[in-house]
Length: 485
Image 1 (cartoon, rainbow, N blue to C red):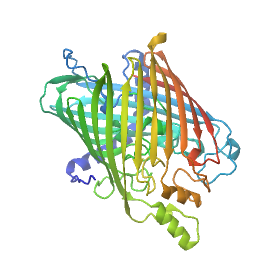
Image 2: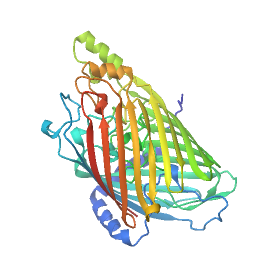
Image 3: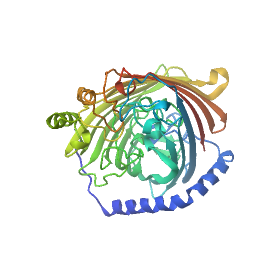
Image 4: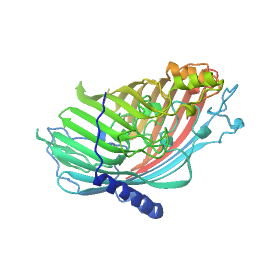
């Protein structure tokens, strides 16, 4: 089990102070910056802003190296998602249930985000990235009543009117170790250039854990691909994040031909699912290690990833909550026993494989020990998900995408007992529970309207919402507009 520590230093304090300065600055000037970037959409060729550091395209070693080394880059994205749901079977509901409109829920859920991706080279092998971001949104049922929530952008919570903040601000240092050269394409938060095939890459600052871990070519970014939390990521991977979806810390990556090894220590929220992070990284933290192997089957690329993680923090256990409830003759409540450090650990296996040039498949299996409350992501202790992604070249729409996916989510026996006795968590709790695994199906069609502008229709059907066979199923209908440069 990982348990390494990073010493604090003067640089940490400087970057934290600078982060606050940037947040204040962009709260005043960010709308003007976004207006400028939107006007620039037509003038600048689009790139795929969904690309993450972990999925950066690399030119094959037999291809001559390009000379388009970037010294700086500016990219941007803007995404609007609106969703509706039907009236569903609801014989009873509790404090943390998915609600019908007649039970007081909002008529629709929506999110609107806009991000600027700014990057530049510093000294040899060093890069810096800044991502000012705006977010506005309203979830269904105050973000309650599901394990696999229907919109990945809602990791940022609820915000009306919009909020402005620095989503990412990090340094990256690449140390070449030989083995020949390869070319990295320029995308958001990645400058184009030639690098050693064997290299060590160190990143420090503020970013999303999913920028590095649990990546997948076909299902990773809710702004362009599948929307559901447990399809876009490994549902049981309780990755380090504040309630806004970002964290702070260190990531080390080692690249060697077809292998990549990553390890990190990242900040967890001071209280489960809270906004404020514990920047100390010695008492409350999340450790993750991942190994990725790239392969070729019948001349078609694929990848397999395996990760393990552990989180340490002040969390309640479901068993302690049940015991305390029995001792006091009260309904069990995790907030009554959140009084000591606990450890959650788990793993995820993540595979992708191209079937044809335009058709790809993916699958994920993830598990955690499920003894403690959710610290950062969602109420899932085990999850199996997968699907297919088809590009539209065969019908003359090569930038269009059709996706079909599923997820089957479950929770631990300790959490089942807790919920059956009337307890609730940050996200779920109907007051009673007829347990059955949550079953999710999602399909979407992404239509490329013009250059980097996409319109998407999305449909999700969720049976046994929040693991309760007495309620649902629920049908969700969604529309997404996405622009990138």
